[in-house]
Image 1 (cartoon, one colour):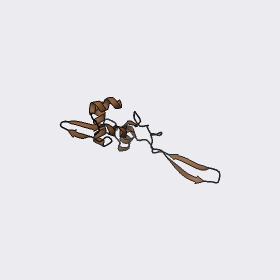
Image 2 (cartoon, one colour):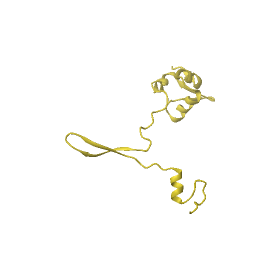
Image 3 (cartoon, one colour):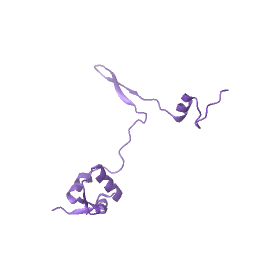
Image 4 (cartoon, helix red, strand yellow):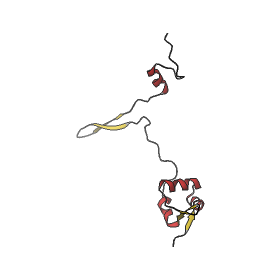
Length: 109
């Protein structure tokens, strides 16, 4: 029978905090069983999350939501263009509505 570990013991083995272990359990990455008021994890289940990469996932390369689109192909090359959405700012939205950022009507000069 597998040894069971508390969330604190799992956190020490994985090098993360106990709240992070509880989060992994809640989202379903780490199976656990409620034992009284504690959550316990089988030692064999640690392998499911032990090979994960530490840290945050990498950010997308382009913040504007650009996507590469193949526009034409030839025998020698593929033409790839990048189309990005225009960035919407608060000033642009307010100006579109004819208002200042404070929510007041803009003065006409």
